[in-house]
Length: 77
Image 1: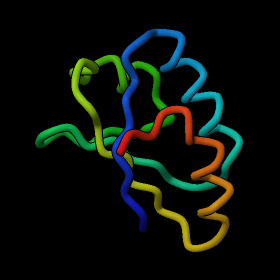
Image 2: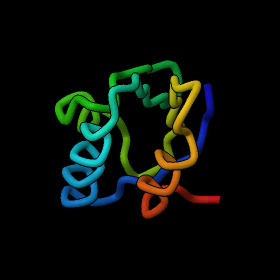
Image 3: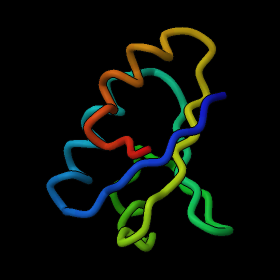
Image 4: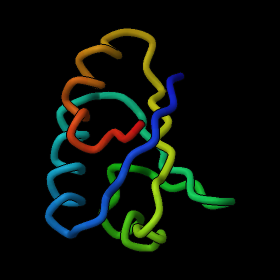
């Protein structure tokens, strides 16, 4: 499992983020405080506080590099 910090500070970013995740047959979780939601769920994402960075857990053994390159517009340092 790999964890990265992401920022989803607009509605368009959330929509494109979910579309990008749908390309992969892997589980993704968003963690914000004590809440853990499925990152492929638009409704779940909008239940989080999107004004702050969120942790994205990527449950993948292989193909992590291509996932990270696809998600690079959302990843923050």
